[in-house]
Image (cartoon, rainbow, N blue to C red; front, side):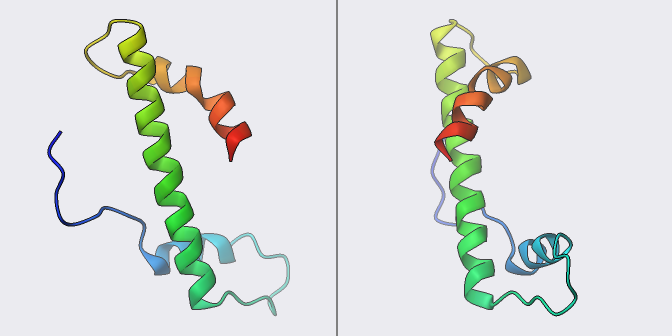
Length: 81
C-alpha cells in the first residue's frame, strides 16, 4: 500500500455533531479543540483496527482482510482503548 501525503481522517464538524447528539442537556457545549482531539482519537482507533485486522489475516495465511478478521481483533482492541 502506497503512503500518500494527504492523511485521511474525520472532519471536525462531523465529529462535533456526532458527540453533540449524545449530550443530555442542551447547555452542554463542545470546544473546537475537543472536537479536533476526538477526531484524532477516531483516526488512530480506525488505523489501529486496520493494522490489527491485517496482521490477523496474515497469521491465518489469508491474502485479504475479511470481516471475520476484524471481529477476532475487536475485543482486545476495545480493551486497549
